[in-house]
Amino acid sequence: MTEQPHLFGADYSVYVRIARLCLIEKGVGYHLTPIDVFAEGGPPADYLARHPFGRIPAFEHGGFSLYETGAITRYIDETFEGPKLQPLDAEHRARCNQFISIADNYAYPQLVWGVYAERVSKPDRGVTTDKEKLATSLANARTCLAAMSDLMGDGPWLVGEKLTLADIYAAPMFDYFLMAPEGSELIQHYAKLNAWWLRMAARPSMAATRPF
Ligand SMILES: N[C@@H](CCC(=O)N[C@@H](CS)C(=O)NCC(=O)O)C(=O)O
Image (cartoon, rainbow, N blue to C red):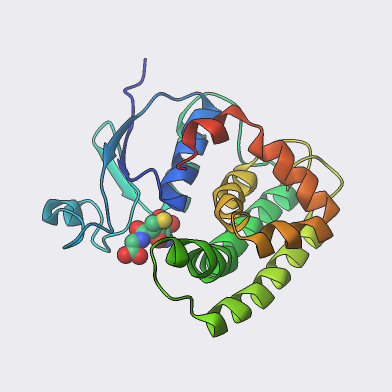
């Protein structure tokens, strides 16, 4: 039996959750070592040896160390038994990678930092919302949802008939975004995406990793 991998990070983190969802959906047991990047003074100094950019997650498996969630999740998918989370044919694989890139570059900054952080997290902490940033992020979030909805086919998942890394990437970002009333209102305009979200949110892996 292969050695269980180690993941380093916090349960509130979107990217740590992506890696955990990937492990759970593959059926891989893992150890999670808590690292709080937002702790006063930052993460423990020795964590920078694992991740020189001071982000979470970091990963280790049998002496092989890795950081960057895209590399970690693809490694997990390709190393362990279990359902394949990346399509095998070139078109679907490219579409899956396109969704991942959209999640990294547009959804994460706009849906999570622009909408969730400004609309939900800041007020909860008694911090004033940057209204201009929120308005811009909501407009960008609309572009994001429209693009994702346009790219979806007619299958149940973002890329066709099977759950892929595309779904695993997008879901934790949507979970935060939909906590904002404007987010849960906006998704109603995209029927396919809304149905996808309800399907995704019902998976046991999502319940097992929900941070709130
Ligand atoms: N490109 C990194 C992004 C990871 C990332 O941004 N993680 C967030 C938590 S969700 C983080 O560590 N933030 C700390 C910071 O921004 O200082 C990856 O794919 O792993």
